[in-house]
Length: 545
Image 1 (cartoon, rainbow, N blue to C red):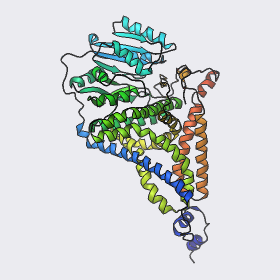
Image 2 (image 1 turned 90 degrees about the horizontal axis):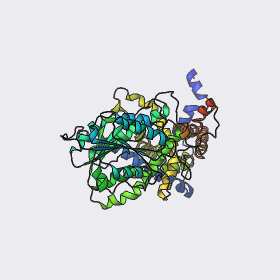
Image 3 (image 1 turned 45 degrees about the vertical axis):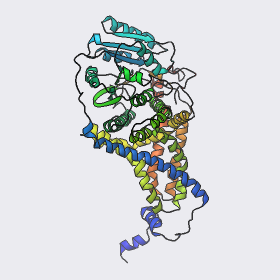
Image 4 (image 1 turned 90 degrees about the vertical axis):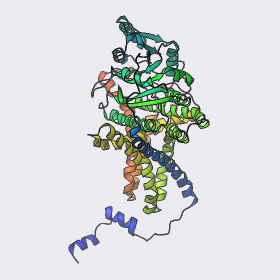
């Protein structure tokens, strides 16, 4: 017997070769496994959830298809130019954001537009020192001749929507440009956008967000990719194909009449921008998206701030779907617009579905382990391709469109991007369920830290959100999946481990970052752990995640 044959015959019965033999070649127990009621009760909801997630995943592929199919339908140039420029009111809604006010007003007051055709409203709902800081800066620019006014409300009735509505009642402009406190519009933004309203059918023009602090950390890099996917492919596909799309709350300009015809700003949802957008388009107004016109802004640099922002968007979109989908169904808009609106406004239902899948994943994996790998691959691979792989495809293509020379590095961020999406399921599921059960909450603003460069320290620690139980739940779930990986290896189920690792990475990453971010600064400065009292959302409103 040759030496290599003997070695093979007496090789240890473990490792990858043994795994392949036992899984695919060994027929000893073939036919012994049979389904039972317990397995069916477990696997049927598991597959139902996977199928729904796969449907939303297929929709991502459809958006990519529409984006490229209608590439020629994008018209970046205005249809004409005004001989006499219309009057514009620039609205700047703020709330406890003292560290970014100076940067904002410097950019706004430097914008190119005739002063006699411009009005700037600083709409301040602040309850802290921001009032004094903002009033002083406005007074300084007003003394220099800028047409700027300071408006402060003693209550937050209606939150951001209420502030915008209050400003609109006294605004002089026919066009309304809106910027949040963390945005820094370029000096030529108004002149680039205004002429698109030469078309009398245009009710709103949205421009693309870019990122002041994209390279600040791994978190901001991933956040930037997530937003790029939305602004490149989602907005691009919907706008080019003629579907409804939404104003993003900032870096856009409205025709005043389009707001009025839609019923004005309303504050019964946390995404007042999307709510107004759909009502305005149902009233017959056309929207235009200009991805070539950029408006830089600051990304959240801390996990708790990012989670607060995402939870608000998730809850608000579900609230908006409950409110406007019945109106859309009753309208005479084309069926494809109605279908796209359902996908758009209900997409965040995937978060509670992900929680359900998380609960069923390990038991389902154990049951299916005894069914054989062929059956698992036959069903799981198509579902995985439709749901999970669609996420990777979506964001890689968006980066290729924006950065054709260095888009390949996106693949390095994909694992943490997908893991981060998994880690958000707890907070976003809570937000979605609150929306479904009609539980109201305050508009939780995203803290602005006024940082742009890597290593730069935040000046706004006072706005850091307090931490509750959620990070500990995330750590516990991550540990559960880590133990599941150990189980898979004891059963030679190697193919499942990489998928489970995403769950471990996602829950541990969001949990640990929520617990640890900010503590290092307190340790370095010697501040008391109780010194930070989160003045941004006073009781009885929610103060974070």
